[in-house]
Length: 273
Image 1 (cartoon, helix red, strand yellow):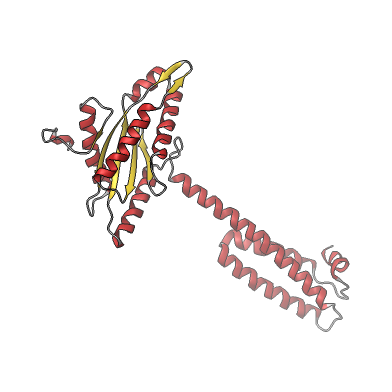
Image 2 (cartoon, helix red, strand yellow):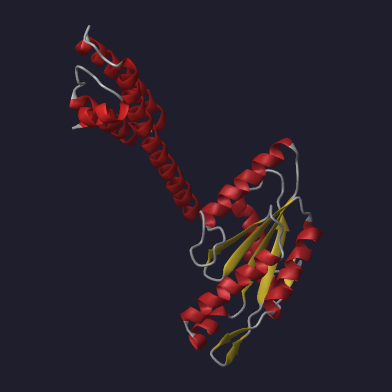
């Protein structure tokens, strides 16, 4: 019995408080947090606590009560509920953060997916609204990647993609963004980089990929990449910037691959420029 336990722990009460009072003291706040969220749940908990105290006072009337013990009983219940609600809220918030983060990431490589790239691009754009800054972009496409999947299998292809992601991550800074558009295409966003700086980063990434050596059992897996680079014009969207980088990448694909292209030749096919 709730009130008998309370008597033993906190002191003698000539007229016991209703057992249901303690049950609701624990149940109502938890339900309120679950249904109403953190702030409304807290408000309902406070209101209910005040009503519970008032109800106890009315029921007890002029009876002889150890008020210190009664107050301690109510306080312990309230603190217990607050602790439970806080743990619940922390777990819920962490779960939401993890879900939001996973929605922006590519599950295979851990880099940003297309949605995450859009979010990061918007972030750079907002930052540049106050202090104008260049934004370099690298579009990377692995050369003959289909041959890797056909020869070594898709599991080996997945390992190659993860290896490429590590090569990219090794050669960019903490404020930069690496993402995978899908298949064998990767994108790197480089804030505060002009065309020459973007090209130098792309060259380091290209060399790292070509120098890395994977293996499928006893067979080596060698891979190269062609990269197109561009720098954002003021007011330019991510799609437009990607299209310009893609035109340069296409030129590299036509010219022996495994290279970085930062300018489109005058005689390039206009359909791809």
